[in-house]
Amino acid sequence: MHEFIFHNPTKIDFGKGREQHIGQHLADHHITKVLLTFGSDRIKKDGLFDTVVASLTEHNIAYVELGGIVSNPVMSKVYEGIELAKAETVDAVLSVGGGSVLDSAKAIAAGVKYAGDAWDLFIGKGAVTAALPIFDILTLAATGSEMNSGAVVTNETTKQKFAINSPFTFPKVSVVNPELMKTISRDYLVYSAADIIAHSIEGYFTATEQPKLQSRLVETNIKTVIETTEILLENPNDYDARAEFAWAATLALNGLTYAGTAGFSYPNHMIEHSLSALYNVPHGAGLSVIMPAWMKWYRHKNPEQFKRFGKEIFGGTADEGIAHLEAWFDKIGTPTRLSQFEIDASEINRIKENVAGNAQYFGIADIYTDEVITKILLDAL
Image (tube, rainbow, N blue to C red):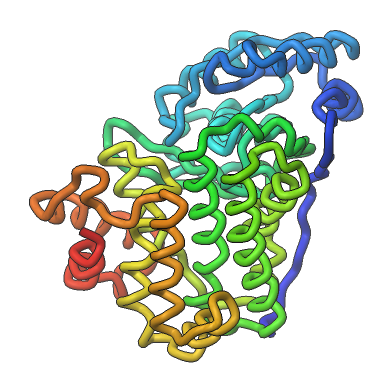
């Protein structure tokens, strides 16, 4: 087990009706005015916006709205948020939505405190040395952004999907009420399941040092996602399944499953980020396409762990484990082929060139050469 320091400063307020406490959480941090970020007007139609505003008003917290944040969040919206936050002199950012809204909120919070172009923070030209306090109410469980410091945003101009990570971009408080997630579409439920599984397997398969305890945690998380996804597809109103699904999403990427793990990378995310950046593919859907193709290529580099995966998750061999995962993705209705996005072989070179830049950014270009990337993409057709 590799040496590690585990520290996660985010407070999770989990359960039914907990969004009503957001004003108190902000007041506890002496916040008086927030930039309230969200996606569509759905939160206004379903009453969540009114609930949030009532809680803010009760605690004398002013707010200014920034709506219209899209899935696969973009830098143009981040820039808009930075300018608005500065003009309105807010002292915190409140995200109400899923991971895309929260990632945008983190980028805005960091960008407000940075003197230059906020994109510098994503490409290594600048460092996050401060950020506005970040709070969130989660409405979609997938990314784990509610309990980590990461934020992933696409630059529409350069077609790059990059990330920031900093101790300053951990949310102060994340409110997770599984009931707020029951109205998400079937598509986004299954995309979310794929996203959580991808977060779980990156270190599990690629780490040079992977404690058995951590493998067991990952396996339990994946089995929980599979079980609860199937329950929710039958009954979206099952609170207990929704709650376990939501907590599994958080655990997949809050640092616990990676404690004591070393020498790992994120190749599935590296490749998928190009699909999102170039074609605006839903992130989880892109991952469910890439994962089986990548696993077929990578399995011989870590045969014992793939053998373990096949046995512990699906009760079969290494090859059967990969096949079963792909079949499960097909069963629940998340894509497993690039052709399902109307991406054919003529696009391979374009994707490969973009992935090559990501490979440099992720620091694994020596492994993921043009030849390797091409093979994985062709297998995903």
